Image (tube, rainbow over all chains, first blue to last red; front, top):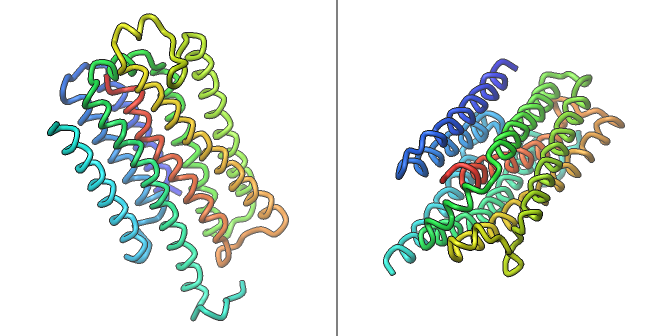
Length: 84
Length: 209
């Protein structure tokens, strides 16, 4: 119970932090900060709400492989568009 | 709960169900990832037009929806927690709260869409907004992706409502127990994924000016 409450509050705080950061006009850092905070939030959801932390490794492996494919996809697209 | 022939134990059987759900969620993630990659590609080509599009989004409504969805993830996590701890009462209410929050999310999204339509912001060639048209083709691509990605996400929200609704009805008839709650667990997993996707949709459409 406590664990979920803490994660929920952390998610709300991170949402507030992300909102505030967006008002600061950080320039080139803005995109990085927004996505980094989103990644932390998604990790919290995955580990605690979705119980990844207590599952067998095979379940975590599916998550890891998914993230690898996402990274590969984004890298490929970025390289393609960026080098035109 | 019955253990089917192909499994050694209940634990293995439930692990298989959970693993299958995770593989499905992985494929769902990749479906959205393709669209995120498309967003990235167009944002690299039209940085100024995309910034103008984000500027035009309703940041307050978007942020409110983020809070709503995160809270709904919390309530469904509590429902699973309650069942695992052997409680039966309260689970139905937590599921109902989750579904209600999902409804609130859709209503807020609907108001946002209505706002956009009033400003002449539609997907594709229907786009007709004089102010944004001064920024070239970028805003059109931005809002086409906006409608497609948030629309696809909204369909997932509806699917989640149905999934959790069925789980709630089943629980009312024959309450889940700490030994047997796989459908509730899988429904909650699905709902958390819907939440996680929105966690990324929020910055790219509302924050990154």
